[in-house]
Length: 124
Image (cartoon, rainbow, N blue to C red; front, side, top):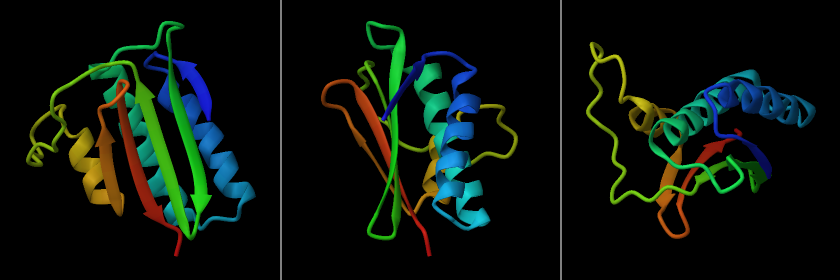
């Protein structure tokens, strides 16, 4: 788990850290590419729609368990519902959850204690 600033530059920082972790663990390039996309969207959504923790950060984590890459982004925001919007190629925004739902094998939202978005990607 890492705590990173609640800023628009955070997806790039997190991508670099995740790419290093996955490379060290010898994960295939297509999985790395997909994981970086999903994590970027998760963080961008948190920054755009969430709330930083009291220290101005968000919690980001990843792990490999039983052939799955687990990604998680938690912020202090509270929302009532998070659902993907229909994918519209002409829209300039609002595609984050649609992208996550298309790329990740599974994803979920936990709204207890802030907002935590989790995603799973199969490694094989």
